[in-house]
Image (cartoon, rainbow, N blue to C red; front, side):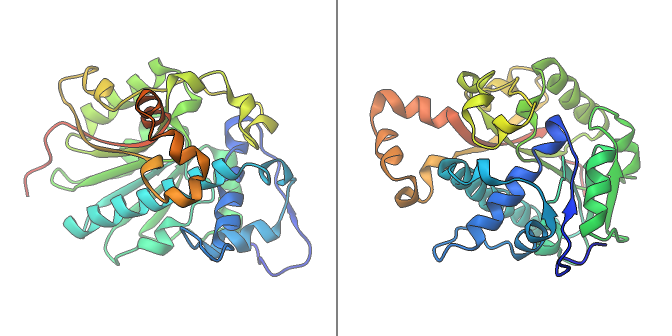
Length: 282
């Protein structure tokens, strides 16, 4: 594992969607250094200081930094609540990148799985150590053998989360993914970060993302749309980022109070929580 205190920085060569994992890492580190920080992520600060990568395109994206901070806060809350209800459970991090959530939220009993494509897991191994309860799976989320790798017992609760991930893929791919989860992990819950359809094909407007070749391909206005895909899918909750930390949103927050713009803002940046079928009986 890399020593973040070494003076020689480590070069990271990634392309397309895998490269985007560096953006939230950097923005969590920047947020963590603010006196009014929404989240504190010293691990992100350490890793950023050890990486040789041009992060400057992200420096002017204050709204994206706020997006990352709030979605981190929200996902932390939902994972923590799930583990409060199910202290012995499975948590799966889709598109794990350099996320250090296990270190923050480990309850001593959870079985955690960090799933990402091989090139991303190779980078992750430079900074994080795999353990018996925090396992790394070097596979695409569309290689559904990862579901077998979980070794889930029939009554074992499962929470899957995906930050900054699903909008890089076509709706047909996401439908197939959800169907596989519903078929093979009945009762599993999924928390995912979602954009709205107006941002599809407009990745060039987003600082940092426009440096990569990744593209925004899918978005939804509301998690209610997911319920229409399959009768097994149930929306448990959803949250718009604009309802949090209004002072940090500056003038944008006031725009979201205007009725004609409220619905537009609500669907723009949100976290969606769904369940696939009935939960397993204890």
